[in-house]
Length: 573
Image (tube, rainbow, N blue to C red; front, side, top):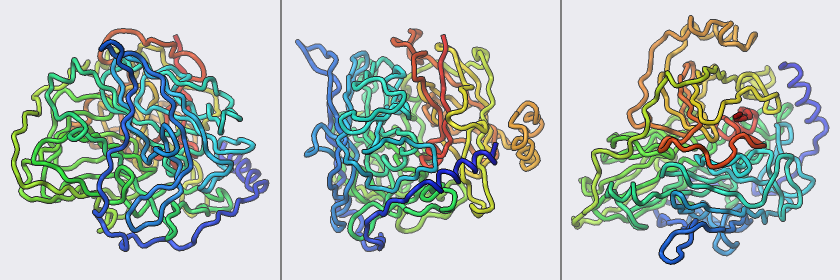
């Protein structure tokens, strides 16, 4: 299998003529950019509903993708980006925050206004979209429970004006039913083989689904001043402001451009490098989204303040959880309350302590170890909001309800030419185009035992499905088990139970609810319960989940997802 794989790669390399990327070759030294000089922006807010006679009704909106200039820092020249917006003039990085209401449908026409050539390198040796001309895009609502046609399937891409369309493209306007539980999502590009480039270029934005009758009684902080999405990511820049992405792969003879991970040396929040935010001595609600390609963040406050977790990914927790540190993988969302009245200082830095790559890479430094600064007004104020003792009660995980048990193995394949670096990453030893093997029934629950045979922590995202983690068990005699798996690719035949008997790592309290992503520890078997139904009601999906083109599941380290740690997921009735 691997011999055929590398033969295919070499044939593509030999037939490929590289594009010359015109850019200043000098990278900016991030220490030359003064921190905390730019105010934290609040991205434009777009309502996903109308009000008629005092009643919310469905709404159709158009959001375009535009090439434009964006200022990431006061002292950095304007950067060419791809940005979401209702027009080019108001397009931003990140894009507008879409605010939807439970039970009220939102229709979005995603329009591609991008130019004929990408602003970043494009590697044809990985499985990728191949239009004749133009930049292909397709938008996925991460955490959404919606019909397959509106899920943003990787091969449903389209170019400017819908001139060219991917093989599974079906419609111009996406329908978001908004019938799921309230919580946080985000939308981003999901194009086959180009997700890392298109997101790096700026195609990201927040999506909040509100349900006032069930959320208002919680009396948590609310309103635009006290309820803020924080979209965090990393980038590197040339001195002329251009986004840096290495145009030469770590093994050019195999992949001319692809790298296993991207790490920028500038930390960006809501489109500004190391911003500052002035806050009052009151409680604030933050919806923190890690929109990085590969970087994990271990957030903490430099003065020891605590995060009060009220939700993880798209769902509220049953009870608040207080922690001093918070680990977020790429694509994960932490819904937290921060009480600045508890601060003993008038200024505090939100910092980062996660190694990169995580967990065994380089430690953070004075540059990438800082995220943003909060400047706290000295005057104490009356605060009528609260942290309720109970939040949302959803069904507890019930293993006995599982209809199927699956084994999902994570592999990385090395070659001598790659200097012990991966050349391709697979789930279950299969490419994306291999026949579908995961075919759950709509309305059922399954147990997935995810076996991570690599050295990286992989955040696993299952489209449509909701995840709750049950166990994390260390593999003993890992190399022996891995050798068998690399030969047979069969967990049962390789007697996984014989090896999955090491130390058990408890699931953190704030990650024991229903999630869209879970971090798969290297050298562990992680048992998760995957639910293909709502958690807030017994109602069936209001759409045909078995329709084409189906869904996918994948590692959300984007460089891994693009090459080729993603598999199709097809629901059946």
